[in-house]
Amino acid sequence: MFFLRRDRPGRTAAATSVLAAGALLLSACGSGSTSAASTGAGSAAAGSAVVGPSASANSGTESSGAVATSPASSAVASGPTTVSISITDAKGCVATPDTVPAGAVTFDVENLDATGITELELISAQRIVGERENLTPGFSSTFTVKVDGGSYQIYCPGGATEKIPFTVTGKAAATNAGSSLATLLQQAAVDYGTYVDNQIEFLIPPVEELVDAIKADNLRAAQEAYAKACPFYERIEPVAESFPDLDSAIDLRIGDVEAGTEWTGFHPIEKALFVTRSTKGLSALGDKLLVDVEDLQTKAKALSAATVADNGKGYQPFEIANGASGLLDEVLKSKITGEEEAYSRIDLLDFQANVEGSLQAFATLQPALDDIDPTLVPTISAKFDALSTALDAYRDSKALGGWTPYPDLTAADKKKLTDALLAVQEPMSAISAKITK
Image (cartoon, rainbow, N blue to C red; front, side, top):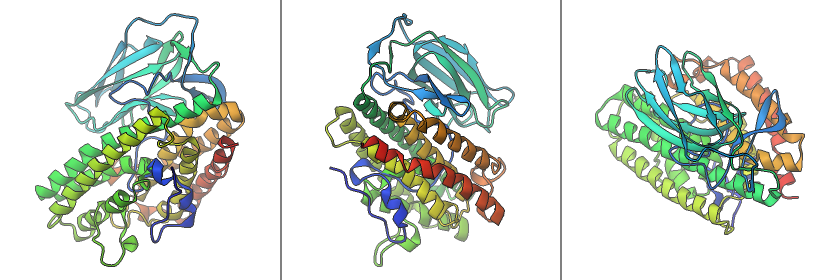
């Protein structure tokens, strides 16, 4: 059974539309690209989903497809294709080969010496098909996805060329043709669960870095680790409050803490690091934060497993839609006003991560929405593109977290971002009703 989330003290009523208590909705720090939902990081795409560009319009790009149940007419390579991606300061991200046949593809990623590139994504239209994070120099990793024929991009933020064309030829073993709406919605929920699990997986290493830096009394490293951790939690904000006790332990701001209750999680650490400018006395808070995040990972995986089992206890499509819309409400009420990161002032980092989280939720629903209302996806996609473009003007590689500090925004800046955000939020709010008709 699912219940609409209750606002924490000080949270706005608009945010109550965000995902239900059984569906896990998060709320805290943010970053990354505004691309779309991951179907695998370090593992194959969820279930037998096939991700690839579809024929529907999408603001000048193709919209992402998913889930395939009927056989395709053409053959697929017998085993996974391997693509090697080397990351260097000189050349950015280089994929070898950059054209592969449809089907399973394994990406072996190695950061040779690039200090300014820490993540990589495979994108189909606005959707993140697969990704790797925390790619520090000398670190290598891998992920496997199943893709259909079409044009993709390898997104390499900070590279010499940030978006590199990547081509998939032929057809995968299955397509969306013949899939019922119920099947498309179920696969959307499964894919969303995979996205959430991936983000929590990516969250744990920087939280570990934060704890280690605190214990080493390294203030600068702790500040950097704090900013690095924030994006992963913020991207999955639509699900955190399905675990109200954990969300309160991880992400409460001081104004939301009830009298007599200990203030724990990201924000008391943030205050100490950026106001007191000290790591003293933070070890216990850091240890508890890590334990709580690991507990969150366990509970999120259980919810994803329930979604795959389709037993009514996992993520529900209408809740994903509500969460995506509600997350934009949250940005309007706290991120754009500078309330969330009151001490570090990395509010735009949170803003961007929330936008990406909303976009990923929307992206998982795109195949079903194309079936319900073919006009809706290109309309919303275009609004997301415009919002992303508006946000990109405030990227600052020299600033902590990679974004202009909140105090440097003018009233005109805030209005521009608010207007672009409202343009997305309005059509997004209509999705849930369409799914539940």
